[in-house]
Amino acid sequence: MGWDYDITADGADLIDYCERVVVVTEGMANREDSDFKLPGLEGEVTFPNKLWDSGNVILVTFLRYTDPDGVITHTDGSAGHIYENISALKAIFGKNGLVDLRRTAPDYGENRMDVELIQGPNEGQWPGHQIWILKAPKPFWRGLTPVVISGSGSVTPAGDAPIDDMVIEFDGNGRVTIDGEWVEIVGSSGANIMVDCGARTILQSAVHRDRWFNPFSDRWLRLHGGQASTVTFAGSVTGLTYFPKWHGAGG
Image (cartoon, rainbow, N blue to C red; front, top):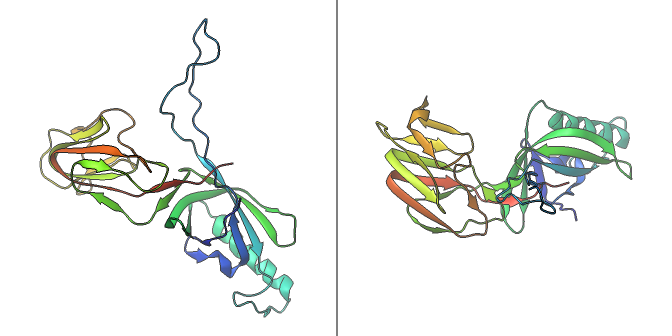
């Protein structure tokens, strides 16, 4: 199934260059394969809590034969518009680095995903039909509206994907626990300590304070979209901010 939404890339509205833009892949990415064998046992022993790998986003564009207003104005006619439009898309997706892909979905609103072109554009079945293979290092659509947790309690985030890039603010020593896993600040001095679980930084006024940080494990913290979690603040915790996530990249 493909989804034809209002899609932009690095702020450029793709409908200016295309009649239609469709995201074909809306499945899940692959999980890391970390199961193991035991001598004398059939099959494998499953390793729980596997992490999601990166995923591919297949984007299909149907190029315009006109300008953005639907009028043929190029001196070379419709062929000239096709050339201009494919050149514009190549400039957008062919950059060295990640492209900010955004869309508005009717069921959960505006969201975004960072992607990078790894193959294409490839010719599709019809003239002007181009296929772009994009890689999403984080294979989830991320909501644009932050959610702030200001105290202990039960939290059920929107979405259906894991959230592991929350930002926590401490005003001194403290601990945040989510379903038995925790991160804490110990031995600190001063306030406004920001722990970014996605960037893996512990900053106080742009100064790294890694020596104050103590995590339960390498996983740090995570919430799960659509699932209730128990969040507990202890000590000088100001708040926790996260963005809902949805599965999207796959294929």
